[in-house]
Structures are given as C-alpha cells and as structure tokens.
Length: 284
Length: 280
Image 1: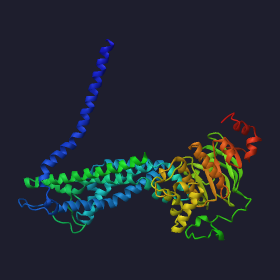
Image 2 (image 1 turned 120 degrees about the vertical axis):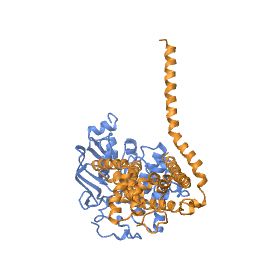
Image 3 (image 1 turned 135 degrees about the vertical axis):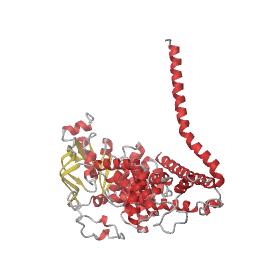
Image 4 (image 1 turned 180 degrees about the horizontal axis):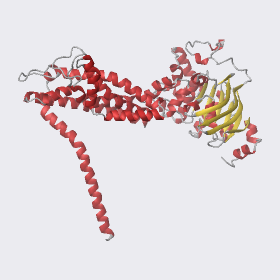
C-alpha cells in the first residue's frame, strides 16, 4: 500500500470515529430537547392560574388544578430535607474529617449501594417502618422515604467538596489554637459551603420527581392536607394518577404537572450551575 | 492545668484564658523550650533521633539542614502539629514554661495558642477579609469585645509591617493581596492571639527577594517580643536574621551554637561540609 493511500485510509477512520462520537453526543442532548418540546406542546395550554390555585375537580368539571399537589410536594421536600440534609452533611463531615480508612471504605461502600437501591424499595421500607405501625399513610412517611434517599447522595457530595479544601487551611486554623470542631465548621465547611449547597440542591432535584417511594407512603390526596400524619398529595403522584386515567381532561393536567416538575428541576440545575461557576472562579 | 493569672495579662479579655501560662512564667534567662531526648517516629521510620536542645527565649533560632533531615518535623514537635499526621509517636520531652508539652493533661489547642506558627505556603482563609483573617484566632476562641478586636487588628498588622499597605482595604478578601503581603497577613494572624513563640516553617521560600527581605526585617523586629524558631533552606537567611543556629542531619542535631560561630568556625565536620556547600 502506498503512503498516500494509507493516509487516506487513516483519515477516513478518523472521520468515522468523530462522526460516531457526534451522533452519540446528539443522542445525549436530544431527549432533553424532546421532553421539553412535548411537554410544552401538550402541557403549556393547561398551565393557567386555576392550575396553580385550585384543587382537583371531578372529571368533566372545568377549572381543576393541582394546588394541593404543588404545596404537598413542597412540604414533602422540606420535611425530607430536615432529615436528609443534617444526616447527609454530618455523615460527609465524618467521612472527610474524622473516619479512619477502614471505616470510611465501609461507609462509602454502603452509601454507594444505598444510592443504587431502587427507589420503590425505600417506599417498602418506610411502609413497614411507619405506615403499618401507625396504620395510616402520611406526609411523615413520604418525607422519610425521600429523606432516606437524600442521605447517601448528600453524604458523598459533601465528602468530596470537603476533601477539595486544601489541608493548609486546617493546619493554619489548628495552629491558632482553634478546636478541631470549630476548624471544621468555621474554616473547612465555610470554604466548601457552595459545594455543600450544590450537593443538597442536586439531591433535591433528584428526589423531587420521585414517584415510587411515595406510592404507599404519602399515598396522595385529592384535598388539602390538614395534618402531616395524614396522606398528602405530591406532584409526581398526581401526574401518575392522572396519566393512567382514561380522561382527556386529566391527561392534559398531567402534561401540565409534568411540565411544571421538569421546569422546577431544570431551574434547580441552573442554580447549581450558577453556584459552581462562582466556586470555580474563586479557586482560580 | 491552668494556674493563676499574672496581673499584667488580666486586661479586658474576659473569655481569653489562652493567655494564661501553663505554670509560672519562665525566668528571663531561662530557655523558651527545653527539649530533652526527643525522638519522633512516622510509623516505623525514626524522623527525629534523640534531640536535646535548649531554645533561647526572645531570640531567633534558625534550623538548617538538607531536605528530609527532620527540621520541619522538629519544628512541628514544638507545638504538637505533627499529631495531625496519623501514626506518629513521640518519646522524650519538650519543656515549655516549665511544663512538658507531651504530658497527658496538656491540651494541644492550648499549646498552640501560646506557640504560634507560620507556614511555608501562605494560607489566608479564602472566605475571609483581611480583617477577619487577622482576628479569626481571637473570635473563634471566644473574644467578643469590639474595642479589643479593633485594637488587636491594627496592632497585629502594624507589627507585621502590613498596616500602611492595607489599612484602607481591611474588608477586601485576604487572598486579594500579593504573595508577600499574604505571608505577612499570616504572620499578623499568628501574632494577633499574642503567642509567646513564633515557629516559622520556611516562611520566605515561596517569595521573591524583596518580599523575603521584608519578612527578614520583620523577624528581626519581632524578636524583641517573641521567641522565634525558623526553619530555612537558605543559609544566607539563617546567617542574616538568626542569633543561634541548629544544624540537623538525618534526624539528629549535629551542632547548635551562635550563628556567627556556626558559619565561621563550626566544630563538626558535617556542619562545615554543609555550610560550605559540599553536600545538601
């Protein structure tokens, strides 16, 4: 084979490889575009004031909304954060600052397994832990299931960002006679605060759309939730109920709910981008 | 652990118990540190071998020696900073103000409030302003008195020869300063809690000659009030700004004498070889 032909052959191979990579990249981006396109087309028309302010109405009666589900999701996420954020952040602090190598290896392994546990399993666990003993579906049960899911997510991201803080800052603080705990809180965690917040937001974005763990914990509710010990509506649950119903009216509302949910998650991710950009600038 | 408070130090500080000595003040001519048969291991590796030395108070003592000879490790044994590295072990004693730093009832945090440290790489806290950096040691140790804090801020920055350069920018981030200014900020941060000793671990080795000169001038000024122990790679620096010099080699103290004597007429052959550049 002549040198030139060999060159042509290699150029062709290079072209094919880069084409394949470009197609793969396009396939990564395409779903998000498609999701937004379909949701906007099908849901935007139903996203009106009534959707945000009214309770669901019986089939055929116009003007129903998802106000209770929107508020319910907010309550569930807030309660889940009360459990997931402190435990997850403190667990991450343990991993990064206190644990010995052997304990840490075990903890990381457990956290990674927990991250991979299918979300419906969390629902089953909390069903057994809370719903059965108290004989009621409740907002508590739903948020506990979501909180459990947040813990390993937040723990690992917190650990990672704390380990990014240079050891020189810990040394400098300890050399000033500052106690270890104050060094961790006021120096290390403060330096990594944006990263910790980012981890929390990503965990929230991850669980905001979870349906499976809520199916037999929060259960859903067609009315306002009056007590956290009672079943509560949530956006993903409401979408699920409406989407599997046979009514066009409810389908349209399900599309609107899905659009709202995706928009929320999109906004959280934008916020994360904004925060991490600030951090990168500071490091540089 | 803490005995009576000397009248001079009872100023306005309510919560600052860290200015109290562990025992009575040392005699004026007593050494700041009495190190006796100090050995230190990283795991199974002996990094400091049976070192005995009296570090004079209110003087500058330089520690020189080739890389890996244990000079930084020795410095860290003087305020127990080596304990941050896992699996280290110390034998022997370090007497400071009449008390062994390694006796079981001594809290390392208390030690470090009296024995400050400046590191090779300047490390102002990136989330804090210049003023916050200087005052962080006091604030996190419970000092709330506004007047005292303001007074200390100016005093520490003046002592660190930084006040005139930053007095209008106290709220700017500490890391916005130049490298040499950052190191002086770290010195101000260390002296704001009014320690009795300053340990300096190659404080100028990352700085340009002009910034280095400023740090050296500063060391000469600070020795009126502080016992200074400085680890340095730079023998000119040791001869310029120290009163006493200790030469370490392979974890052992080879020679300790007047700086003038070490550099003009060393007793030991190894010292002479090192300072004349035959090795190291």
